[in-house]
Length: 259
Image (cartoon, rainbow, N blue to C red; front, side):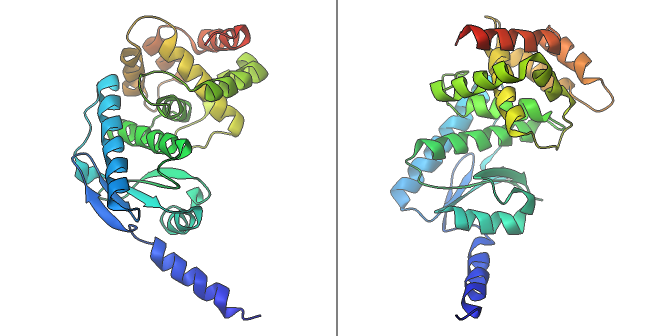
């Protein structure tokens, strides 16, 4: 067997994936890079732009100008893997990533733009982008929880049935103590699979627990989060209840089957 062939292939793939893929499609709020046909690319760019507009309206956050966001769409996981392996190696096994470079934010993902999984991943990463563009040191539980809830798309906030069932099932399993552990995960740290699902459950509960405007409490929390302040204090002052109470309510809601 010729052992040089796999090495040559790896080098070629690496070169192909090291920069933006395909053709650029500039828009008002973003620039999309993709190899799909122009009509399909225009649909992806339009859907991304509309989602950012809807999300910005819901969160009362301004969507930055297009030059700040680049979306790299690869046709398959190999192209995505090679790109991430060069750009952000620690994220190379993910199916979608939002990361920051010197002059912009990059959202990169792969797959068929017509599939639900692709659209959910795109909305998830765009949520990370909009939050990162406005706030620093975001706690991982709310960063991931919010992105999961927003990934279901408008009307905000809602979760697709299977995603909600998965999140509530995990909340029932870990109980209050498992939920409380979320508050101890520092910014920049990755959540475990269990914490990821539990974060979705409590975020969804916080955004839907009462008739008051949820984004107000959420934005207050994101603005107040900073080093040196106990996370329990920031949580209670922002949301109007303690993390213990929020976890208790989340578990009770999951056990009752309330959507």
